Image 1 (cartoon, helix red, strand yellow):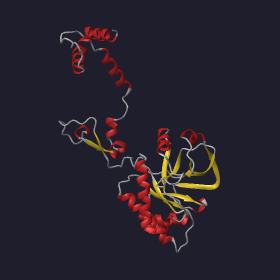
Image 2 (cartoon, rainbow, N blue to C red):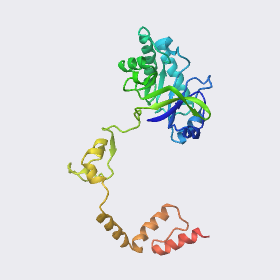
Image 3 (cartoon, rainbow, N blue to C red):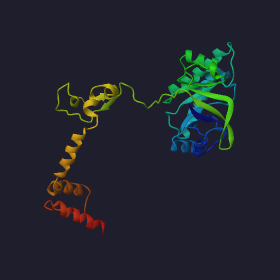
Length: 295
């Protein structure tokens, strides 16, 4: 399992790495509070390849406003993230930071629904989840209004689809502060990952080839064809040792005369002054280049 942290401090990326963490769960949408992430912190974390996820939380009563409050809080979070130049593929979530009774589950679900629908309807591409105890995670999962799950409380009580567990049996020192430690149990789906049906340009496409059985006749291919189809046997498997030997031997047969026209055309395109003569040999052109750069 991989370790993350969440806390109200702002340790540097190096301090996060030194603590043995691969990333952080950050707070956003509440710039009035010191725990809110900062753009500089985010840039530092991404420059070092750390995972980041963002949660909205004022206090344990955030859900009390129901669906309207969920939408309002989601709007505040997205506005804050966008103003901080956070990539819109980052995971976000609402929080219900307390145990809820059976009587209050409908209200918590309404809160999550308002948050989820606002995120999905306002151009955020990253997955939207929920934080809370087992009863909350199960309820929003059953309602189909979460993409990922950040669970608190006793791990054995959490549903099997819990992505991250906030381990409250202890803390972790990150940058000198005692923070919550979180275990990544199930990695979140990458919203930028290719789907099986995504189309890619065929690098060896030949528009004059009309043979459907020949890979070169197809302008595009799908991710599935690339990964598991027959095409990779023709297009993408490494060359054999004999083929590589043949390529190397072919290079040895290139003469200076073969280079004459390509060098001339390249220098003309670059605006070389004075332009080379079409009758210049490759050796003469190379000498001129050397002279130019050693003046």
